[in-house]
Amino acid sequence: MNTLVTTMPLRSSSPHLLRWLQPTPMKILALAVLTWAGSWILDHRDVIVLMVRWLPALFEGFLVNIGIGVVSVVLATLLGLLLGAMQVSPRPLLARPARVFTLFFRNAPWLVVIFFMMYLIPFEVQLFGTYYQLPDWIKVALGLSLTASGYAAEIVRGGIQSIPLAQWEAAASLGLDRRQILRKVVLPQALRSMLPAWMNLYCTVTMGTALASLLGIEDLMTTMQLRLAAESRPELLLPGYLFVFLVFFFYIYPISRLSKTLERKWSLHD
Image (cartoon, rainbow, N blue to C red; front, side, top):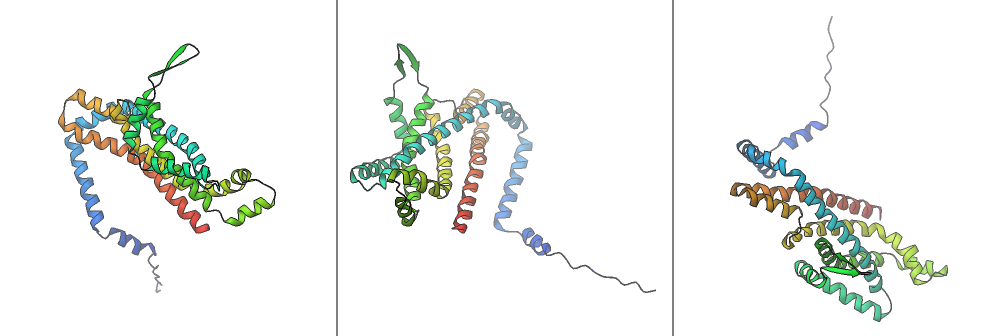
């Protein structure tokens, strides 16, 4: 009795698998880097053990960076909303000063502004007869918020101007004044186009928080420098600073990718 043998066709994913297995310069470079990293880890196990021991202190230092970044972006957003709305105002007395302020801080060096705020803000303030010490990280956050406010103002201005004029006219026909139109009609619609740019601004400001280490604030960079100085081992410098780089990268990169995804998704819907 003859047996009928049938063969199933290969899945369509096979060409994709073969294409993925084909060597490319980027894949070869990635394989070489992974091979070198694996061999380096095997030869420097004591360094890995030391880094693991430092993790709690390094994590606390990175929380300082995150806190400075969040406070800076919140303050920059509030000031940027005001400046962005003023720039689109039909009154030159409001639009021109806002434009000058935005251009000035967009082109100001971040580190210079931070140092200026450090010396401008007093060490302590007196309220109702009691002296309160101002932490240095607040001064850094204020300095970063000033420079970031220029970028936030441009984000707000671009989002407002992206709304069609017909929306303004339709809202005005309902009896709304300009402030009500901005608050109830324009800004809610512009939020979708502003959010990806705002997320990118947060990533940029968070990277800028590493400048706080130059002022002695115990952030991630300062914590790593103190640990390296205590060990007095030159072979720890490269892996130590590489660790700092990777911490910032793995925190910022997902946020950046999410902003790109939202921007692409919403642009397709538009």
